[in-house]
Image (tube, rainbow, N blue to C red):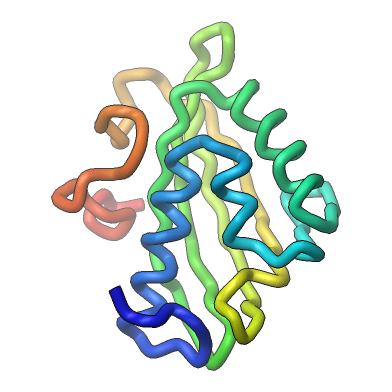
Length: 153
């Protein structure tokens, strides 16, 4: 794998996006937090947080609620030290109601490649279980699984 520090090229921005997707699909808050600076600033939906401890806390709460979480991210745009992605993820609640959440993230990176700012806008849409499109074992999305664009999302 190439150096994934800024400034980004098309290839490294795509790789950085996939590395982020794989990390989030681990559903391990501690692992995910390590790709952010110690003082990383987040806007996640309507919640504003700063720092890795707050990230771990938010993700722990998130994945206690969002069961069977599977995520696909897709590069939207990039520049020197910024990347914009769009994403969708599917999950169910503890009553077996399924949802697909759609969103956009804007990322800003420090020189060392750690994310220092993340702004996420996310909307949830109820779906029926038979409408699910993300079918792989929990964890990393297989390389041959369709992308968001391939799935018409």
